[in-house]
Image (cartoon, rainbow, N blue to C red; front, side, top):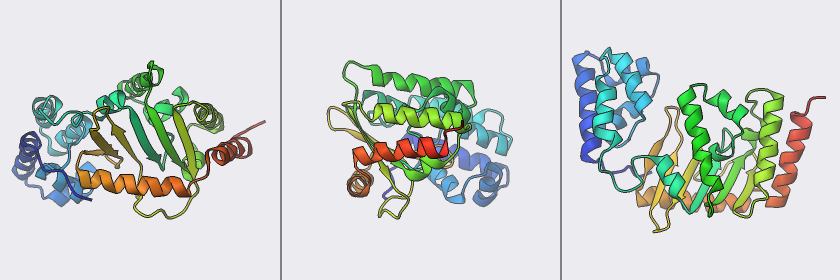
Length: 262
C-alpha cells in the first residue's frame, strides 16, 4: 500500500525519535527489539509515515531511558498538530462518520463489544472507558450506516470465557437486526487484498479515513491509493461472505454449540 506523505509534525517527531535513539547508541533493529515491534515500524515512525499512539511514545521513552521526552514530544507535535481534518484522531472520524465499513478478523468490532468482552481486551481503565464512550455514536438520532464483516476466527477465539463469548455473540445477533447495520460473517479462507482488520470512516462531505490494526495499535491513512485498495477488497469480501440471514444462523450456532455451558 502507498504510504502517506509525512507532515511536518510527523517528521519532527520522527526526528526526535532518531536523535534519542542515536544518542543512546542503538540501531533501529536494537530499538525495535527492546520496544517489541518490527524494525520496519521504527523506520516508519522515524520517517514520519506513521502516526504512532501516545502509549507507544511512552514505550519508546522506557526503551531509550529518556524520561518523558517522547511522550512530551507527542503531546506537543502530534496531539494537536494541524493535520488534514479527521486525520489526527480516528475516534473523532469514527464518531462523525455517516458510513463505517469494517472487517474484523481477530476480535468483535469495538463499537459492538459488550462491557465484559471489552474489559478483558482493555484492562486499563482509561482505554476501557474510551471504548465505551465511542459506542455513544450508536445512540445518535442519525447513527452511521455500518457495514461489518466479521471473520469466523473472531467468533471462535475465546475472550474472557464461555459466558463472555456467549454475551458477545448475542450482542452481534442483536445489532444485526438494526436498520443501519449490515453484518456478515466471512468463513476462514483466503481473500485477495485482505491481510488484517480495518475500518474505513466516511464523512458527510466525502472525506475518508482508514484505520488498519497493527500489533502496536494501528495506522491511519487518508491516501487515496490505500482507500481505493480497501474499498475494492471489502466489496469483494462482502460478495464472498455469508448472507445476512446465513450469518445470523452461523453466529447463533457458534454461540450455542461452542459457548453455551449448561
